[in-house]
Image 1 (cartoon, rainbow, N blue to C red):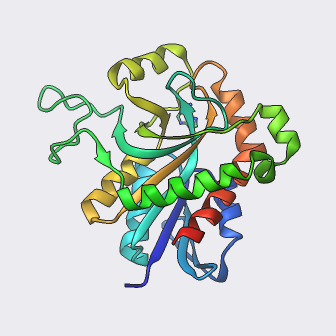
Image 2 (cartoon, rainbow, N blue to C red):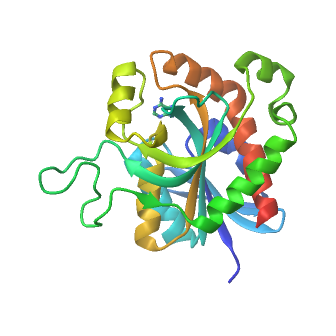
Length: 251
Ligand code: ADE
């Protein structure tokens, strides 16, 4: 089967650079979303901005699968760090995804997915391996090659790659209190964002392999709004472009 890779990005700024990589492009609009169909190198791809939050990302992921028949799905974006030691610029590849704001107690356990008998959705081992191999090579070339010297200095970038759990919810986390609540509920989680676990659930139900790649833009505390804003404007697009290009070499 010829692969048809779906690529979703959480911010338009990030995914616009990825869209620009495509050749033999056609653009299809459905449900106020723009899907760019084409190729990166020899790999067939469909690229779209997921939009923000779990419902929006669910719609976009479902359309990618149902309308465009993607065979594999990569999600790229930023996240707030929860785990101790994780720094702005570090990259997290998902092992498992969980919805931190899902709570249908007392019928089922906190964070359990209704009727799916699980709290976590595991990302595909093969795609996760593809992503970690590609990102290891990318970081081996040095972060300066990816974002430029000025950004490295401004954001004190010395990125490391982590493999672990990612939590999603319909909240931008920007307080120590909320950050600690999520950590005490889900102590193993590395970072928090707003779409990954929704896309994971869609992919689980449709049987489509996926993985999520998140660059840390902030530490989900009282500085998060400012840090996130700066990271998105100045460097997030360079990260997503470089990550996607490197992943394509693995496929
Ligand atoms: N994406 C990037 N930073 C985030 C945060 N602090 N909370 C939720 N989603 C994010």
